[in-house]
Image (cartoon, rainbow over all chains, first blue to last red; front, top):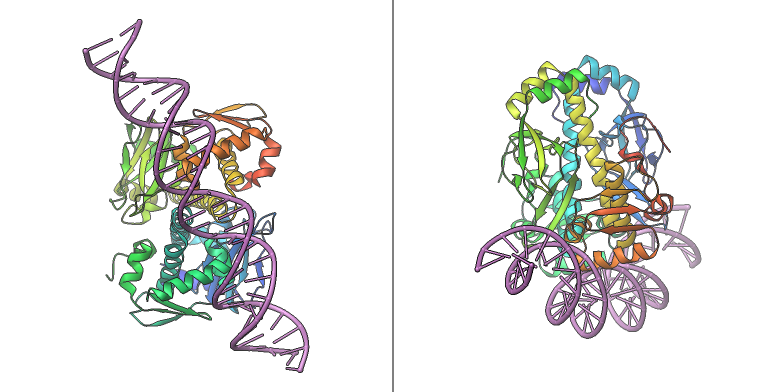
Length: 226
Length: 226
DNA sequence: CGGCCTCTTGAGGAATCTCAATAGGGGTGG
DNA sequence: CCACCCCTATTGAGATTCCTCAAGAGGCCG
């Protein structure tokens, strides 16, 4: 989160820890955004349900992420945030956050930075949804999540991705049936293997190229690897 | 931009004004993000071109918008920003911005807020791209742009939207041919009329409902209208 | 053992695309 | 002022991608 040790300490000291189980709602769409949430363990999602019942997942959160860095500026939560797996979450009530922000202005920068990072992630997703076929679109999301979980994973390494095919479908804006076929296709190309929440990337270079994935947008610090 | 008069004055004083013509590039993808840009007049877009030549427009900017509030935190511009029409742009070199931010911490808040607002807009676009058919998706984008241009436009009012059908297609992630058919459909429903950059909304309430458009996410201040 | 969720595969259908041809408007040079 | 050109808009027709419905298999848990 790019915070100094002191700032992080101040933030965490003001926070309350809570545990959520799979599908528990942390923050309902339209509800008051009354605390800043930080995910310490597990995984979570932000989603919107449309009138026809269709669901779109807008963000996937992994340990270390803030869940609503931009939303605390707003009154109400624009999406529903819920747990993908058992999750440990820290929360700081907005009143306390406000006083912290005046005492420690550098925290504002961190929130701004986190907001910008999540906007970058959403931008790449938007590009995929708009202009990529299902195969590279799925490949890109897998690259992104694997990279965020484990920047330096090499060929053949496995990463735990707690997403079902239905959930992947709701991230990608396609049907779960099609996700299944696309996964089969990517497996057939020898790029990846994804089964029951376990992703293996066989050829990172080829996969990145196929997905047009460039991890630059996920870096918060100056380049530290390829 | 939610700045105090003094802060705005300080910001504008440090800025340099420039005029761009249609399709001029303000900031190239991958280029250094060396200044903060603010759009004063005209319109602009942020876009990404994929390897197959396909283009996706990620943001449309209107007067009053900052063009890269989150990107100044990063090294390089993630998208190409170019003018949709003749545009007047203020720019503040990042070095000067940095010193301004230390002198006037409240400006950080404004940049954070603007970053969060643009993330909100992108989130709604993402939802449309993922889960809405072309008709409500286009309707939603038209609602958004009309609202941003003129919050209080009523039924039958016209708004100048400097977008061709090709550009709308690149916003929506569909082909320009299909944009044309969808516009015809929306016209047939009596909701809107869009010809050569001029949008008329016949029935705002019906259009909002059809598009599932709720302007809440575009508000930076507490509610001031319906 | 039974139920439920996830995954897998097939088959027909719907939305959207690409290609192609035509029309309209606005600018520019002869 | 006209002719020409280019960009934009419009419409048709066939192709493609992805969807929906449906059925069955596999795993997990009470």
